[in-house]
Amino acid sequence: MVFTNGITMQAASGTTTRHQPESGLSRTTTLIFAIAAGLSVANIYYAQPLLGAMARDFGISPGAIGLVVTLTQVGYALGLIFIVPLGDFLDRRRLIVGQGVLSIIALVAVATARTEWVLFTGLAAMGLLAVVVQVLVAFAATLATPAERGRAVGMVTSGVVIGILAARCVAGVLADVGGWRAVYLTSAVVMAAMVGLLMRVLPHNPLPGSTESYAGTLRSIPILFLRDRVLLVRGLLALLIFATFSTFWTSLVLPLSTVPFNYSHTQIGLFGLVGIAGAAAATGAGRLADHGLGQCMTAVSLTLLLLSWGLIAFLPSSIPLLLIGVILLDLTVQAVHVTNQSIILGRYPKARSRLVGGYMVFYSIGSAIGAGAATMAYGHAGWRGVSMLGAAFSATALLTWAGTRHLAIGSETMECVDGL
Image (cartoon, rainbow, N blue to C red; front, side, top):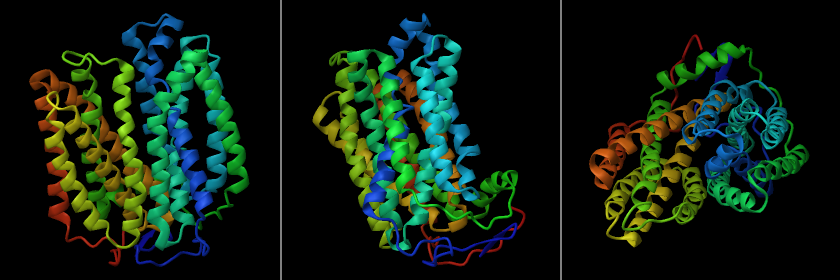
């Protein structure tokens, strides 16, 4: 057991806490969680296909408009650190609804912005508030019984995947019909409806019996990951798989937009639709994790992830092989991601929000590393360099798992950690 300022946290041995509902989480409620997560995460991806229109509307240079993406990502990172952990000592229902209401205000502000300052501030706020997705993941894991935790986390993650994929398509269609502002106004209306639904279906979450301060909660996050090797390994795996993921998707536009393809942005965007396979993998991996197959799923997925780069490397000679490789990449990354979350959320039932926030910091760091390294690799060695980089990240992840596979992930008793 682990004691943190008077809070007893139990290892994932299948035991439940007094806050764990006996009835579990219904499929309908889980689906609503997934839809809410998808709608929330979409808010930070709508801007990507709209940057040109925004730049023209405000007279911003093409180089400066890229600040939009940076601000949303910075806001998201800050939210992971400072907002998500609040779920460990506040009523998650109120936290989710509150973030939803503030997101609506931010969406309306962006849609009606007349100055760059309002636009950038609104977009940064949207990134900050989009971390409600991670609060939903932690809440779903808390409401679900231990036997269905992986399935619940997997379904919510599926909603996130679909939300990311659909955001670009929806934004393009709505912008063609009513301009870029219509995208954010429509999202505000949909979010308002979703908040109303969440207020009806979200159960009241009894306040945890924590005596920790907010500052103490934040301090406990790095300590948990540094003291518990399973958490640290799963965080490192997240960093590596999302570095791999970002390596591919950041650089794909570079060869496809030039000869011999000369694809349009719309055509390149269609490649993202194959990522729907990742949504299917998320749910399936969650079910396997529920049956104690998390380690096996991780090993198989990381092996296939490495092999996927052998197919991806066939670009530009074979688009069909590239597509098969992309499907494998998306399937395996999401499978490991859901397995990671299922494992870490089962270890400390009373610290799930801070665990999700800390884990997603690894995710964000990996995505940033992959994006930066991919463009450099392409500039120096073309698509072959990108493929070698992606394979290197994947191989490192597989070796990391292999070197730590002896660690028990569910039933061991953990040592006492003081001073959290």
